[in-house]
Image 1 (cartoon, rainbow, N blue to C red):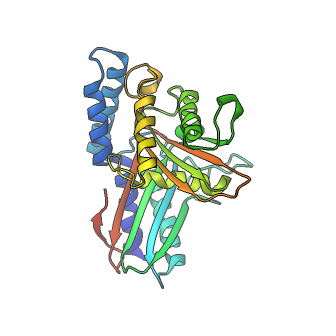
Image 2: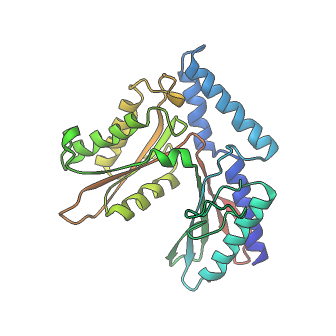
Length: 292
């Protein structure tokens, strides 16, 4: 259990302090695309410097280290109870060291015990598979970007959005418009079409596990992702809402079955500090490979 805990502490450290390569490439491309001398270019330059400094000093990229969300794929017979105990101890230790800030509070009292532990914190999602591989992915999702997530119920009359892909397009773009640079843009959208209110948001956040430069295997959803990304970046909102060509870095969409009476579109928003990392583990709990 100690080896597993140590591996998870290192996963937390790297996730908190280092932007994944695919995200870094997208931010550099965005900086090159913005007009030199503009506020948008200056904002992205500061972001670039922030990323370099955090990695060099092995310190959190952002003062809000966010909600801690683990996604764990494991073989049948894997001890999930022991793994969850190790994950909670790793979060506690990482908080003590400073890889995570003390920012998980009791919702009734507002009390902060300084451990980042409590009901629902951290969030841990297990998925069993028939492979012997153990894979742990971690997302640190800040509160600012969480605040600008949105869920729509179609049809949405004010937006003239019907229960079809065009209606989905309209409400997703409305979510971008309503954010107006809040949530520390440029952002990344994770979207689920369908599901119920709970699973819609759950599946939308799972989209953040995808690489920024991947393509959706569903042709209709792929086309929708590309169209929304292009249109959003033509709105002129830009980094932090300062104007410019980079409102979004990526759009990732999935679909889930729904009951006929409901048609939800759930939009999760991720800030530029797209903290997502993962590892595969050996049977002893040691890190074998990094996934991003």
